[in-house]
Structure formats: structure tokens, C-alpha cells
Image (cartoon, rainbow, N blue to C red):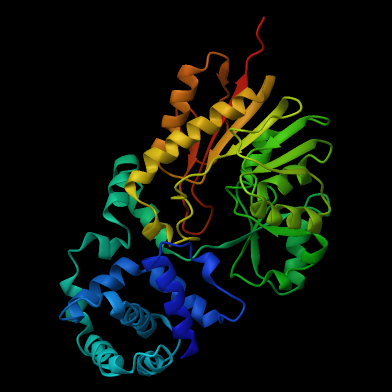
Length: 423
């Protein structure tokens, strides 16, 4: 019963208040509460359409928590490892803890009606594109326009639970050696295809169960994200800027791969750098962490390498953050592209002649990727595009695009440009 109260609290923060779901959980929330919360958000458009068929009139205003509780109940009867009637009873009992005793009969009636007439109710929403895809219409249109041949695979990957991917610290041991440690610990895993430091676990586990995690042998980082360091490839002694560093996965990977560099980790807000510092401490790495807007930052010297992992729509990592489908708006995309171009220009001013800048996003939308790079390269006379010769992703005019893979990497975009040395 407490699980449903916690889930309603989280759902209200996301759906009603537009807050990020990850920031709403607290230490007292159970794994079941988190499962229900993530499940409802992941299946929101489908569940909401079902509820629309089951209610005579919408539950709004002061009754919105009943609506959210019913969404949690509908998710539970189909997805929890227990009899459907047990989920119905748990949902009904939650009305007491939520101080909604008047809704007890309504919740019971709606859920039992669904179970009695499930096939007919599901059929009634078969033509609802948002319900069947669990994506907002505006995003479906953008995906279809950008990736007509891959749209079904993208949607399927977005709606799936993400794999857990590790990055092995090559300063400690090799990737095959860590895979052997996992095997000895009865943790089933496999080597990744593209990133040499990456390992996929067959099932997610707590990091506390990973061999030597506390000693920095491994970190959690998606395979696509791990490709940034090798594209940057700084030489010893170089000054390197990670321009939007939090939470620090790429920062630490760059330092693991290229330890003899001077790295500055920059991010907009001080509190976002806490996770960067914690990652570095666990891994025994050092960087100069600075809180600043990149557009206002004045470095003491120009950088030889810059990684600009720009803020974006995050449409390539929806499976990890399904609330993106509810929180993001179509109007956000052009605004983000404007910001990305501003950041790109700011970073370029900090790059030394002969230096290399890697631009990346976790977006699959060309507006934030190819279009931004096209505008930048057309307007920047000393920008020299460096083709990325790789077996991963899809070759684009200005970079390479990885699309989310059901059993593999997230969606990611990379472009690499050098600053010409003027005569």
C-alpha cells in the first residue's frame, strides 16, 4: 500500500508539476514503488488512453491523485509478478493512505471492469497512435521524418528497459580480465561491440555487488557515451576541457584513457559538479572542476582538446529517462538548437589553433545535431571537419549518429572538427 502512495507522489511531481522523475525518489522508496513509477511513465500514453475508456468523466483538480492511482493500478495488474486481483486490492487499499476513502469503490470498480473487459477495451484504443507507441504525437512525427526506415526500432528501444553497461578502468585491469571477475562472481555479462572498455550485464544489479567497484575497477556508463574519449584522443601534456561535464562519466573516462593531461571539468551549477568530484575521488583521478556558464567562462589558456557534450532533448536516452516523453515539448527543440550553437561558438573561441573539438549530444533529432553543425561549419572559416571513420552508427554529412539499440547502446551523435592553423 505504501508503494502506491510513494508512486502517486512521484507521478504527481512529474505529470502535474513537470519535474524530473529521478529527483523525486527518496531513500524510503521501495524498489516496487520505483518499478510502478517508472512503469507508469514508460507506458503513460497507453495507460492514460485505457483510463479514458474506463471513466465516465475525467478526474481532474482535487481528484487528480485518484487518476494517478488508477494509472498505477492499471500498470500493476498487467506487469507485476503477482495475481491481478492482488494488485487490485493493493491499489484499492492505497486510497486510505492517500486520504481518499471516497474513491475506494471507484478504484475497485474501474480496475475490475478493466480485467473483465480487457480485450474489448484494448481494442477500443487500437487506432490511437500515441497509445500504441507510448510516444507523444509531436515526437513521433519528428522520428518518422528523420528516420523513416528505423522509426519502429527506435520506438521499441525507447519503450524497453535499458541494459546496464559498465566501463572498465583500464588503469586497473583489462576489459576481458574484469569480465572474468564478473564470471567468478556469478554475474552474467558480455563484451560490447564498439567501445573497448564496455561490458553489458545480462541483468541490472546494484553497483555494490560489482567486483572492486569501490576501488575504481569499473563505472556505469553507456557504450555510446564511452566513444567520446577515443574521438578526443588527447596527447600527453595537453590541456583538455570537458565543457558540460556533469555527472562526470566522460570526464573520468578521458582521464582513465589519457592520464597525462590537464583536464578542466566545467558545468553550469556547483551542485552538478558534486557527482563529478565523487566519481573522480572513487577512481583516484584529478581534474580542475569549475562551475560556470561556458558562454561566460574565460580560461587561463586555450585548450588543445574540447569535448562539448551539449544540453539537448535527450531523445536518445528515453528508455533511461522515460519522463522525457512527458516533460519535453516540440517547441523546446529549436530553443535547444539555438543554445547548442551558442555553446559551440563559445567553446570554439577557447580552442587553440590545431586543436580538436568533439561535439556530442544524446539526441537523435537532426535539428540538434547535423543542422547545428552545418550552421556552425558554414559560418566558421577556420573549422575543418574531421570525418569519423568507424563501424558504429550511421554516417552523416557532419558526423555519425547512433540510434538507440534494443539490446545495446543508447542514441548518440558525434561530430569532430579541427581548428585550422592560420598562416
